[in-house]
Image 1 (tube, helix red, strand yellow):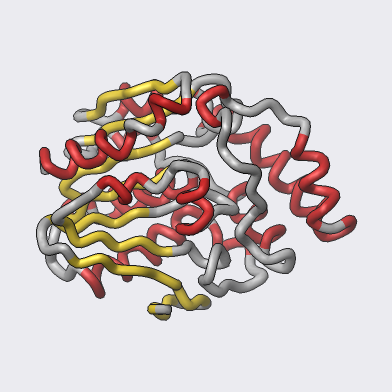
Image 2 (tube, rainbow, N blue to C red):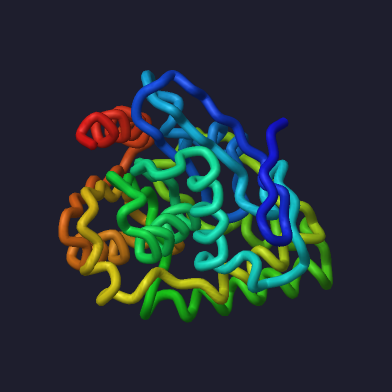
Length: 258
């Protein structure tokens, strides 16, 4: 296993070198490289002729982490991302792809260093701005529940929530975060939000936004707002798993466009 040291964590990663354009792939909250593959969210599996860097965010998957909420803020995860890009793709423009927390991480990194990105494929943008407040309360409650009653109680409480039709048929999976760190990952998410609209309007980066319907944690309203704020963004909305299975082809086209 390849690892890379960032402040407070060892990042587990894999690098596939088929020459060609550099691409970095992220994942969502409580997920990992391995879990996203199970959930059909590993868009990099459809890429050929690229240099693809995939990694587990701090505290997720095979990466280590600390019991510090601020470590898991999207702004801090963006700094981790930029350190990885400096190491693997120094001085190069990179195409970024990732869902939810990964989408937030990419946007914060792009606001910090917009010239680092040739294009973005943003999947399942999460609650943001006005809709973020209620979700943050839920994250804090989940963190307390895990610490007081264990991960099993959290999973039971989460089991009856409605699932988007585009996820029909995907296997049941568990959070790929340890019981010790999961509350802190949730607390970091509660402290997080997407960059302010005035910052997003300055991003001169070709962007594709991939969303799906009927998911309160990843509402279409956020995806639509990003299309409004980002100068060069387009939106695709999936309502079935078959449509989601076409997303790797969308990423391949986005990378070729770069």
